[in-house]
Structure formats: C-alpha cells, structure tokens
Length: 308
Ligand SMILES: *[C@@H]1O[C@H](CO)[C@@H](O)[C@H](O)[C@H]1NC(C)=O
Ligand SMILES: *[C@@H]1O[C@H](CO)[C@@H](O)[C@H](O)[C@H]1NC(C)=O
Ligand SMILES: *[C@@H]1O[C@H](CO)[C@@H](O)[C@H](O)[C@H]1NC(C)=O
Ligand SMILES: *[C@@H]1O[C@H](CO)[C@@H](O)[C@H](O)[C@H]1NC(C)=O
Ligand SMILES: CC(=O)N[C@H]1CO[C@H](CO)[C@@H](O)[C@@H]1O
Image 1 (cartoon, helix red, strand yellow):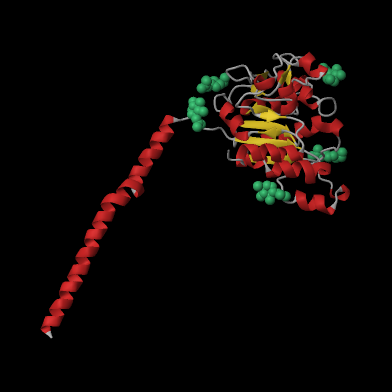
Image 2 (cartoon, rainbow, N blue to C red):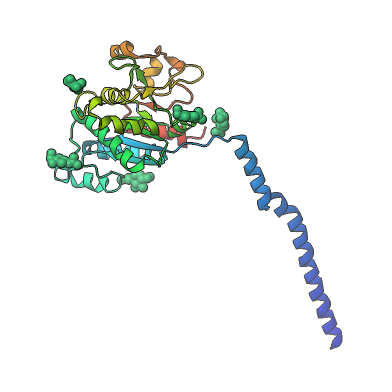
C-alpha cells in the first residue's frame, strides 16, 4: 500500500516539475519576445516619435439634391465620405416631392436639418452659405478644417489630411484649385472642392452677417460668391501645389488633366500653368471633379482594394 502511494506521489511531483519547467521555458522564450506589453509599447512609441505629424480633424460638407440621392450620393456615401471625421449631405428635404426610395435612403445618410434650402442649380450659393453657417453654429470647435465638395467630386481624404497637417488652421486661409479671375487673389473651383480653415469659417460667419460685406445670399456662382464674401474679411487663398509644382485639387476628371483636354474657360482662368501627362497630378492628389458614380467606385477600388 505505502509503496503505491509513494509511487503516486513521485508521479505527481514529476508532473508538477514538468509543468513548472515548461512554463519557465515558454515564458522565457515566447512571451518576452512577442507578447510583453512593455516591449510592444516601446516599439509603438518609437514609431510615433519617428513620425510625429498629428492629422487634423476635417468636416466634409457635400452638396447634393434628392434627384441624385440613389446615384451620386449613394456612391459618395459608399466610398470616400466616411473617411472624413464627420460628413454631412447638404440638401433640400421636401418629402412631398421625394419618392419612397429617396426618403428611405435619406434616413440612412447624415443630413442636417437645415431649413429653407431652395432646390435647383441656381441656388447653390444659398446651399453653400447655409452649409457653412450650419458648420459654424454647431461644429466650429470640433474640427480644424471644413471642406465643401459636390456629389460628383472624388476626394482622397488621407491626402487632404496629410496636406492640411502642414498648414495652420488659425490662419484665415483656404485651399483648392485656384482660378485667377473675377475676385481679388482669385477663387477656388467649387467642383474641385475647397477647404476653409477654422479661422476662415469664423470670418465667413462674420462677413455673412455684416451688411458692409454685402455677401450674396443666393444666386450667381457659388464658388465666386463665397470667395468674394471671404475676401471682405481678409481670408486669402493658399497654394495647393506639391514640391514638383503639380496640382493637388482638380476641376476636371483625371483623364482630361492627364490627356491635356483643357477647355477654353479653364485655359483662360487657371492660376498655375496647366500641365498634362504625369505632371497633371501630384502623387499626393486630393480631388477630381465630374466623377460619375461608376468612376467613384473605380477610383475607390483601385486606391483602396486592389492589391498589385
Ligand atoms: C452610408 O454610409 C454609412 C457609413 O459607412 C453607412 O452606415 C450607411 O448605412 C450608408 N447609408 C446608405 C443608405 O447606404
Ligand atoms: C424659411 O422661409 C420662410 C418663408 O419664406 C420664412 O418665414 C422663415 O423665416 C424661414 N426660416 C428660416 C430659418 O430662415
Ligand atoms: C498660426 O497662425 C496664427 C495666426 O496667424 C499665428 O498666431 C500662429 O503663430 C501660427 N502658428 C504656427 C505654428 O505657425
Ligand atoms: C451689394 O452687392 C450687390 C450684388 O453683388 C450689388 O448690386 C450692390 O450694389 C452691392 N451693395 C453695396 C452697398 O455694395
Ligand atoms: C507614413 C507617414 O505618414 N509618413 C509621414 C511622416 O512624416 C513625414 C514628415 O512630416 C511625412 O513626409 C511622411 O509622409
């Protein structure tokens, strides 16, 4: 009897020793090398210190209209818009004139409750004005930059953020594709999208409510009128070119810029020399205009999903 108890005891002690030895071996090799939290954070910290650029927060204001909800707005909502820190579709919202499909879709995208937006292309100035007033009244302190885009703009949000991380949002400055006519210092193409610093948005609000600024509340060309309004408070357009002088914002689709298909209106008002082929577009390009829903998905597929 006592012999077999002793044998059992030996076996138990043996098992315990084996477990201790194995645990020690594992904890010395595996965890220290791969799972030690201190070790990991050391690595991460090194990475962070290597690249200290903190990306700014941006708010995207996307002008659209119920007619384009299920085509353009859908494509924008399924591609670049969610990469903004926050985004809003700025649209009139009159349930009486909308189809059930449009209403159902509208309930699943962020539309701010802005009153009195007038439908129609000739009222884009009002739409932009109301978009910026909405952003000022609700989100001035939440974002450093506020970008206005259209539902046929394609935006590479990461490039926009990287570009803006080198800019000062306390400056009364804006960025976009610059035309050099009509307005002192020019104005940014509306379709290529343009971005206001927080300080610019603050001054926009001031100007809009200042009778002396005489900002146009509706009608005329949206991009020209917003620029005119901003100029009355000293907001100026910044330079949006890369180190090789290639454009970041584009008022036409990629193919037109690349092939050099430049309409006269563009030739006459482009601030910077027009360039084609691979100089058309910065490798850090931010935007293109006149992008169909099909092309939105194509751009997004090639940039974010294709793995060559
Ligand atoms: C719009 O995009 C958001 C974010 O990806 C998503 O949650 C939402 O369902 C989309 N809306 C529609 C109607 O597809
Ligand atoms: C909207 O329009 C109506 C009629 O034109 C006007 O009475 C009302 O004050 C407007 N509301 C806002 C918030 O501008
Ligand atoms: C940013 O611009 C503001 C206003 O012009 C200025 O006071 C501030 O020093 C600037 N900051 C940097 C880091 O240049
Ligand atoms: C305000 O602007 C309108 C249209 O741009 C112009 O007709 C009018 O003369 C301006 N008023 C003042 C006081 O500058
Ligand atoms: C990966 C990445 O974001 N790299 C950036 C680190 O910071 C330098 C200088 O600010 C940028 O040029 C890099 O693009």
